[in-house]
Image (cartoon, rainbow, N blue to C red; front, side):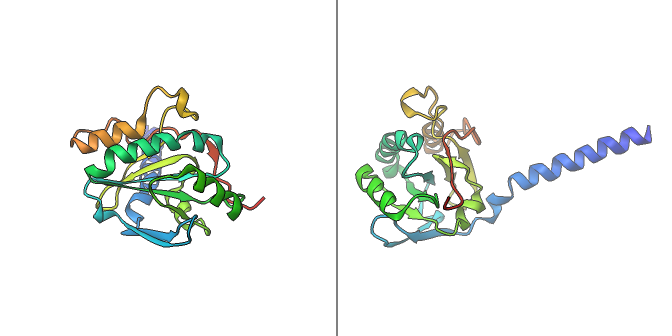
Length: 194
């Protein structure tokens, strides 16, 4: 009986430790994130507190078709939600993508928000971003309230559930979030140059 109680207690400790560690990054976010844009090497600093309703941050790739397929959806969300108190930011951290490739792609994609380079992966690793596109919604206080896919498909044209848009609509109307974490579908972020 004591052995079973100890096993149950041990399982509960393991579960609690895992649960706390999975949310640890949210409390460690700095009050802002900044860096040089991929297109003009201009320094941009994004402060969470400056967005009345939240910051949308999406990890993007210059070479991933999954990432590219969601760019039109991100443009549309920017048009719909930017004026409602949301700010948008892209992050590029694929070390296997050259500066020339990255600049060429994002010049053609013409996103209406800045895309910041994360050359040391410090921010990418802090958030544990895995794939492109990997979306995060950060509250004005700096807490991650949503992370996961933009949609339920790695190709936006084939998606049926638009996770990120639904989260932004709920935040805009002060409603409970329909999702806080979803599966991220896309290309794995390359953390090495080869």
